Length: 462
Image 1 (cartoon, rainbow, N blue to C red):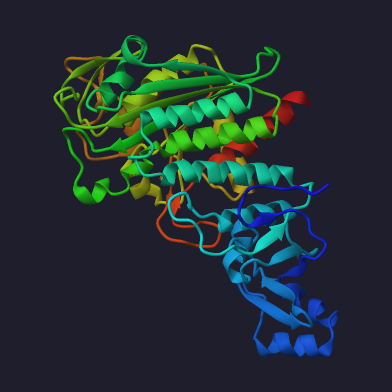
Image 2: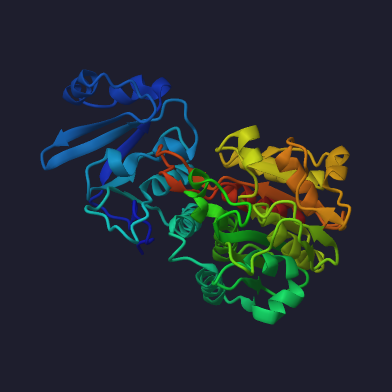
C-alpha cells in the first residue's frame, strides 16, 4: 500500500514518478558513463559538476526524462533541502540509489518543502518526492519539525497562552496522554513564579501537563518548555526592534511539543511527562515589577532583578515540579538568553547539563543527526552573582558577563543534582532561507534530543 504524509514535498508512492539521481563529484564520471551520449552532452553543456544544490533536468519524449541533483560533499539533510523549489511545480520524483543516506534525504526534502501557509495559501503545488514505506522515522521527525515550526510562526494574536495550552492538550489527546491543566488560583498556589510572569496580561497564564504511558518498568523522560507567547520585557521593556520576533519566545514549548509528538508517533519505549508554561509577559497594573520578591514552587524566594528575565521564572516552577517525579532524564527547551546567541550565534543552541552522561548523549546524537548542540559550563564560581540581600536568589546578575551561564545556574537551583538534567538555550528561528531551513521558526535541538532518547532506550534494553 502507498505510504502517505500530509507534508508538502512528500507524496505517496507513484509508479509514474520521474527518476531523480543524487550524484557526488567523485561519482559523476561513473554516472555519465552509464547514460547515452546525447544525455551526457546535454549534462556537460550545463557545466554540471555535481556541486551541492546544483540541478540539471533532462528533457524527454513526454516533457521531462529525469533530473540530477548535485550533492557536493554535503552529507546533511540540507543537501536535499532545495528540491521543492529546484524542481518544476506539481512534478513527482523518485530518489534513485546513490552515495547518500535515504533517511536524511527524505527528511531534508520535507524540511525544505515546508511553508507556513496557514494565513497565506500557496499559489502552486511544489514538486514532491516519493516516500518509501520504510522511511517512517524520517517522516515522523519531519512532521514533528513542521508542527513546531507552525507553532513558532503563528502570530501572537492567534496563539496566546490558552491556544498554546489547547494545542498541547490536543496533541496529548490524539496520542492517548493524560492531561492536567492548571489555571487561576490553582496556578498561583502551585506555580507562583509562572503565575507572576503572566499577571500583567489579560490573557491568563496556564500550566499544561500531559503524561503518556504508565509502565513503571520504562524509563521516565520529562520535557519542559518555555511557552512565552509574546514577551514585551515587562516594565523593563524591550526596544521595538528587539520585540519584532517575540512571537517566537514560545519556541522552547514548540520544540518540546514537537519532540513529544515524535516520541509518541514512533512509540519509543519510554514514559513521557511534558510540562508547558503558557504565558504572556505584558505590562499593566498587575504586572510584576523590578525588585519584587516572588515565591516559587520549590519554596525558594526570588528577587526580580529584571522583568525581561521572565523565562527562567517559568522554567523554575516547571523544573521543580518535574524533578519531584525523579525522571531518568529531564530536558528543558527555551529561547532563554540573547547571551547564548552572542556566544554561539543563531545556528548553534547552547547546552547546559548537570550530568556528563546526558550531555555527551545529546552532543553525540546532535552531531550524528546534523542537529548540533554546543555545551557551555555550569560554572560554579559565577553562582554567587545571583545572590540577593532580600531573597534566596536574584533572577539576574548585575555583572555584564556570562548571561547564558548565569541563567542556567539560576535554573540549576531548582533541579536536584541527582536528576540528570539538560537545558537547551535555543534561538528557534532561521534569519534567512537556506536549503532545508526556510526563514522563520525552527525546531533546533529536536532531532538531537529525539536521537539521544532513541539511543538511550536501545542501550537500556541491551
